[in-house]
Amino acid sequence: MSSRTALAVSTVIFALRPHRRTRRLALWVPLVRRIRDPHRGLWALPGGPLASDEGLAASAARNLLETTRLTPQYLEQLYAFGGPDRSDSADERTVSVVYWALVRPEEADAGEAGVNVRWFVADELPELAFDHSLIVEYALWRLRNKVEYSRIAAAFLGETFTLAELRGVHEAVLQRTLDPANFRRQMESSGRLVATEAYRTGGRHRPARLYRHDQSIHLAENGPLTGL
Amino acid sequence: MSSRTALAVSTVIFALRPHRRTRRLALWVPLVRRIRDPHRGLWALPGGPLASDEGLAASAARNLLETTRLTPQYLEQLYAFGGPDRSDSADERTVSVVYWALVRPEEADAGEAGVNVRWFVADELPELAFDHSLIVEYALWRLRNKVEYSRIAAAFLGETFTLAELRGVHEAVLQRTLDPANFRRQMESSGRLVATEAYRTGGRHRPARLYRHDQSIHLAENGPLTGL
DNA sequence: TGCACTTCTGGTCAACCTGAACCTAATGTC
DNA sequence: GACATTAGGTTCAGGTTGACCAGAAGTGCA
Image (cartoon, rainbow over the protein chains, first blue to last red):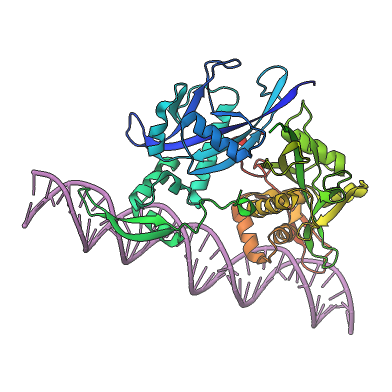
């Protein structure tokens, strides 16, 4: 009854890199090892208290930078978790505003530095602190839904890319193979792609045309909140 | 820099009632007149500080009950707003976790009592306090999106209803007319409806069969968060 | 009683979308 | 130059969608 309520911001960060065993693209998530009770020693989402003069999204981006040295290509609010049971300690309850972010693989490599930070494959996580397992599960659900009707897959890729590369992102996120011809038809008719005159050569096969995304289209459509 | 951060929970409450002029179904929203600065006299979303021992959703439901005497048929988190600029006063910043709720019209009538509470048609709102106009706009956007792929329209109706009544809800939310025959076909093939043996008589036309929703299907699919 | 009127309900049709299969094009390798 | 491999394009069947039509079954009125 007399408990205080603390406000924290955490972030689920996704990167796309080959799985260690299968070499196929998989989603990776960086976690931070807790160095104090409760849940000391368990892995948790990067996050921290909200600075008094910054916005929620800014706090997520700052914390992401501090813990993983990364800047997100895409950042969106996921959910605010505030059950009275998820307390840090007996006399303090924490409400967490959680964001989810997408970063490029090159960036993810550069971010390996942090000593208490380690990257995990998103579907092979260890036991996490607090309710963070549920949070990651929900973030994965949102990502898998959103990749189908937005162009957020672009956040995993560079400026230009082949349709096979873009398809690889979708396949890794959705965890199923997609028909190349049908995928091409869908992407071409979506109007989100712009064909360039460049080609990706070097493979032992016909070169693939490079595309880029139409920059005038937002990564994801969030209605009236698009600007935030 | 030295400002404190307060945590509040607000709710955008939707009911469906005939428009005062056109007599057509429209979305209504209850607002509360502010009795203190800042924005004294302006209308604002019902809400209040989070009690220390309750969950976020519970706080929204309690506040909804206190200000409008209503219990929601549907309640879902909308977004957490926390820009550093939306402060109540110079030295205190407020982070608002906003929910949106759907209530039945009968309930909405009973809720007229509150003296500083008034219902407005959702697209004809006056100037609102803080960033509440944006919040309502976003809630409307979410509602209009969600009504197309979930069965939340049921929250506006009673236990049983005719297809015309259900179509009326969709038309009012989406603000466009729908073909009765095609709407029927879609609803029937969705598997969400169960036909009853009762009919609605009394109109000067052929009686309409009454349907009810399949209770085993959730109002809205929220993935891993369905239980919360 | 019979007719007008209204909405319910079931159906058709063309356009579009989707998944699946197949074919040709263009490169590197041997 | 033959071959393996992936890019890129076409076709076909099945399902879905919007537009429209017509009979069914009530109420109200002559």
